[in-house]
Amino acid sequence: MPTPGHTAGSISVLTDQGDLVAGDLIANSFFGLVPGRPANPPFHDDPRLNLASLRKMLALNPTSLHVGHGTPLDPDRVRRWASREHERLSRLEAAGRIRARTADETA
Image 1 (cartoon, rainbow, N blue to C red):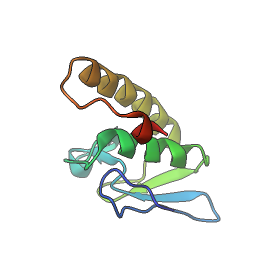
Image 2: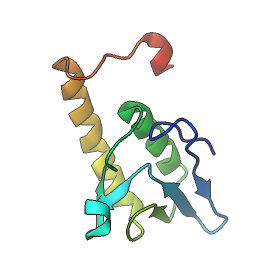
Image 3: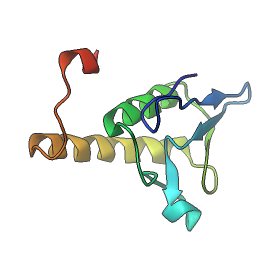
Image 4: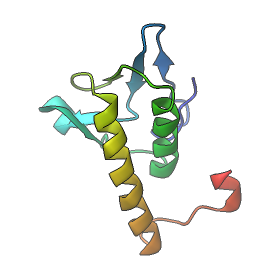
C-alpha cells in the first residue's frame, strides 16, 4: 500500500498474519539502539503526511510493525507515540516553525 511521507514512493505491506512491514514510516530510537521504542527516522519529506500514513496503517490493526532499522514495534506503543507526535507537529505549526497545510493537503 502506498504510504507517502517519508519519501514520495514509500510503501508498506500488511501480511495475512497481521505483520506490517512499515519500512521507514517509524523507527526504533537511535536506529535500533533502544529496541522497541518508537521514534522518527532521521528525515521525512513531509512529517504530517508520514504520520497520516502511519495512522492509516495502524487502523488496519497489525499485530506487529517491522521497521527498516531495529526490532519490530508493538502497535499499541506506536499508537501512543503517534498521538504525541501529532501534538508535537501541531505545536510546531502553531508556532510557525512548519508550514500550515492547505485544505487540499488535508483532504
